[in-house]
Image 1 (cartoon, rainbow, N blue to C red):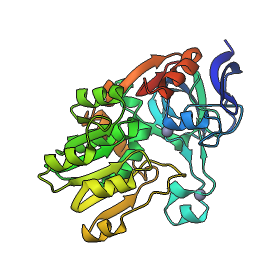
Image 2 (image 1 turned 90 degrees about the horizontal axis):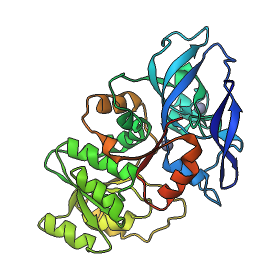
Image 3 (image 1 turned 135 degrees about the horizontal axis):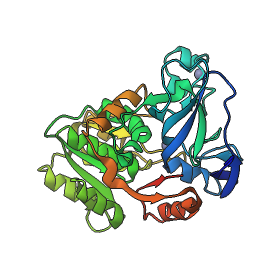
Image 4 (image 1 turned 90 degrees about the vertical axis):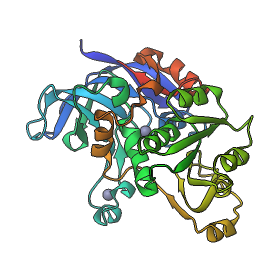
Length: 338
Ligand SMILES: [Zn+2]
Ligand SMILES: [Zn+2]
């Protein structure tokens, strides 16, 4: 066998199933991975939208949430061995530009991403540089392991929130990133309300021990105020990207707002005085920042178990159909097994 089935970003809006040659080692610092599974990320959906919501290189095999085993090692690879289980920190930083030199490498000006700008994990094999690898324990169930990359981003937000036991958090948007926020807050001993319009998502939230709030049926403001004796939430997360004003209304005095979701078109009208009067702390968080090892630790120790949110398991050939389901809001996390 010298070819593999791969899901390729063929052109604007089109994911094409193609036969591709197996990747070969070129640089001595590279490894070849045999993919166990690769998760479908919201970014993949943005890439495949028309017009696209995220750039990607045409002709590239997509898939950046990779869980795999090393099957071939370059001569200069020092820290990993054959057969080892790994996940991939897909964002490759340059280490040279100004943000990198200032330690803000998550803002690297030259950064490239495996599975977006070079071939990724929607195929049986993928080639990555050693520096992208993160070791993963054999015992971690695949359906949990697949969440590592997204969790590393979410920890960038939950670290800043620093929620305390007994506090109340409201997460607006019960998609994958919102759900991980909810699970992290719950693990920290907080009470968590998940607000969304999708009964499918809210059902999963409820099964995961989070309080579902259907904003089509219930006035969010009323629900939060009656749950807090009119004080407001200690923490509000906007996991959608255009819910800033709602967050300001839901959060209580001295509370925290995390703006995590991204929508470059959102220009909300804001009641600025609420920030001042309630003495709020508001912050943004963009991609995790040295958070991969802790994301792995959180999953390996089963501090949270997002496996119940891995709703679909497909092979590469069936991926286009699964992506359509995700677009219809009928999937939380799709896992692709080559
Ligand atoms: Zn992603
Ligand atoms: Zn850089």
